[in-house]
Image 1: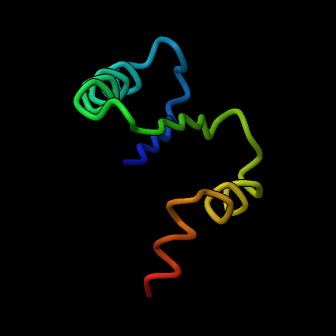
Image 2 (image 1 turned 60 degrees about the vertical axis):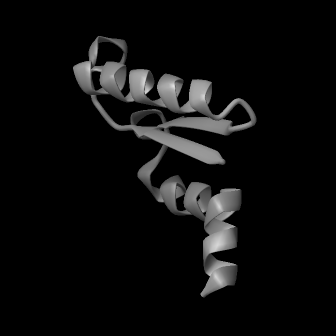
Length: 67
């Protein structure tokens, strides 16, 4: 299982949504010990680079190959 958590809150470490998402990812990881977790924070990268992150992610490559 691959788990991709994309944080986009401008509040960063003070963000309630990031905290909730982190808790969900932690529970998913605990239930799936072999899971690969990737956490990306959009506000820390250039928006132009977002497309490259999406294209480079293994889950995206698999989804495109399945089409």
